[in-house]
Length: 119
Image 1 (spheres, one colour):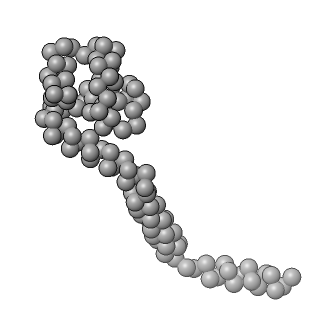
Image 2: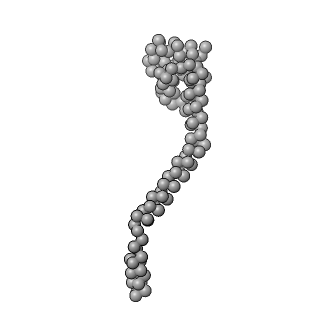
Image 3: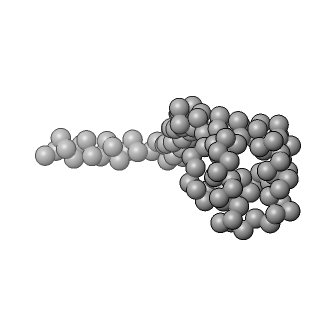
């Protein structure tokens, strides 16, 4: 039993290791793990695909000279129909036309959008 008491006393004496050092090491390891997790998420195929879809949508809205308000209407339509890729709205006029009545978009806004997108 003395052996275990000696070991315990030894730990208590050597626990003079500064608690701040231990805390610093734990914080550093946690920060490295967090950075690695964020990098892994950022470089994942799903995240890349989402950034690509967003980029293509943004470029198409710029190419069609849509205003930010018109872009927001397209995003509302995509959310309403739960379209995973809003770029589909540039190709599927039927979704656009059906959503105009459902979302009650004013004709003064819808007509210029229709001309920009589909003519």
